[in-house]
Length: 316
Ligand SMILES: Cc1cc2nc3c(=O)[nH]c(=O)nc-3n(C[C@H](O)[C@H](O)[C@H](O)COP(=O)(O)OP(=O)(O)OC[C@H]3O[C@@H](n4cnc5c(N)ncnc54)[C@H](O)[C@@H]3O)c2cc1C
Image (cartoon, rainbow, N blue to C red; front, side):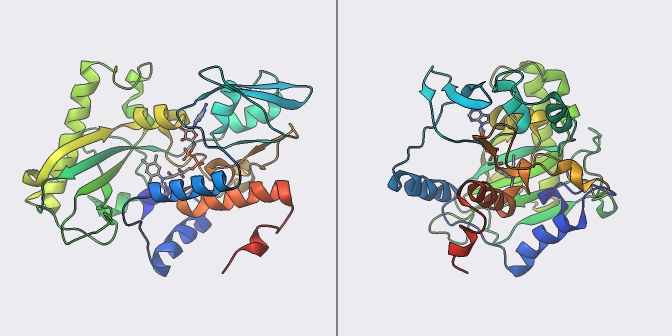
């Protein structure tokens, strides 16, 4: 399960290993028909409460004056104002768009110096009809199980060391899978030479390299499933650069800040900031993923409405 939480030998605290594993031991769950439903359901809650969700609107600047956020401006020039603001982005992205000098230098330097978790190369595969069985659990394959804690080390000749793959459930899931996601850990250094490029315009050399990495994964999958290749209808690939450019995380980090058992305090980032009307949330102020991010959301919300106000209302 290591690829699920970016565990690194001698570094990742045992509590992360324990929290992620207990989810699986208690019974893994998946969304029938995709996890977008959760986002849509949350959106409905916000709209019912009188709010609005604005998509496709990158924030270009967060303007701070007199120790307060005064306004947020999106790429199309729209200005948003509020009593309180919550940044659910990586702090390095926050520092990029906020008024320079808004935070003390020491705070920025501390956060900028926290190492981030590694990235991944991901395949999204569409299968031909009724060619590949639906598998009702997440699968892991490693070439060398002794290497499981060192996945961040990159050697193109022997990459991928292994992968995590899953066949997400469709709304009326039958015995065949319609698609598959394969995640292979890949550090940013593998794509660093194309760091200055943007999605869709990275050049022929990159496209050739990317096609070769797809082939590496498909060849390894064929070892697990000899009839894998004929089942493929379409294959889409994403590299650490894709993750970087879509999520605005440094070096395409999958899970944000890398926790360190030798320095637990290093990655403890409070949800409140020196700017009283600006709070933080998301994977960088707590744990990542479906287990961690909702907990950060509750912590941030309780920083506004009061301790235990939300937890006490939750149904067991
Ligand atoms: C390929 C991949 C596979 C993963 N698989 C799993 C998994 O199987 N299980 C699991 O539990 N976790 C998984 N994770 C981790 C999980 O997705 C994250 O921990 C979680 O999404 C983090 O939530 P967040 O709200 O902190 O940040 P994000 O989900 O990254 O949300 C931040 C959002 O802010 C947006 N943003 C950034 N900058 C700006 C800006 N300037 N203006 C406006 N918007 C901006 C980003 O586009 C993004 O949509 C995976 C992550 C990746 C990348």
